[in-house]
Length: 380
Image 1: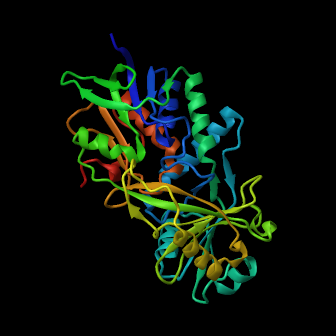
Image 2: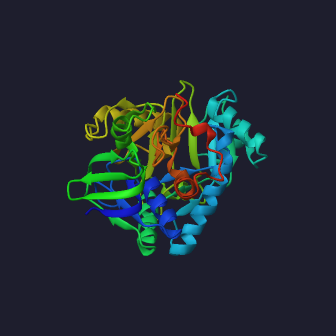
Image 3: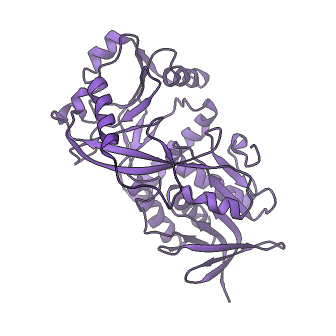
């Protein structure tokens, strides 16, 4: 007879690991299934750093969730006695009319968040490593920082396991069977399992599950590249000197970068709106083209020449996006025992803790204290 649980979670990346922890800490029996090893590098939650910020250009309605996210990251650090979040401050640059500057300021105004606007002369004086256009300004937000994604996932998994969660790795799901009378059956390459509820947090692999379960959320998976360059003057990129940055330059391209992580000798940089190619989670091209590196070098030479062109490595990552760029979180419209969290559109990792809390509340209470109306599965 199949083993039975209160909930089965498919996918143990950022969202799945946090959900396993939240459910297990509430005394629920949880099975987590992951097709790869723990904190793997094949999806969207790897690569040394993920940004967290509050004056949210993607929409001010995210800000209450962000405030809770900061609290939950702090709680995880306290429980694990690990440093997962590093605060560096953040600088958002472009012309005053650019989306990065305009929308960051609009979000800050709506929630009365403390930010400072730096005009070109002050921007150059305070941050000589940047070379902005004379028309560019910067929005400085002090609470911005970065999370260590691999450590965060490992920590959530360890905390979930200590609370009794049954976590299984290198075990791919072959099919899901939904019972009309309630409950689910999940078949893997090793065994079959039953549960009262199913939670899909499969990242770029969510697309196939949503199609199988006829969830009406169109998802687009895209390949991106993250690069690391070793600066000639690493002291210029120390976390107490160099802020995280997001920069919308004059051709509308947005790129971003981080200060040096502890013990690292290379600065991480990447495009956000550029070098995005459609793929699937299983056929992504992992080889980095020479042109992809050289194009990043051209932008660094123009805007952040202090990074230099001493390229160290590049790796791929995936965005799994909805048509409107906002998340898809909620209950299956036809099968109430199925919950979905998908389509985080390249800006979801920072929300992992609060998404886990939302899914746990939905699974246990049938509702959540958080406003997730903007993420409804049936909005498309």
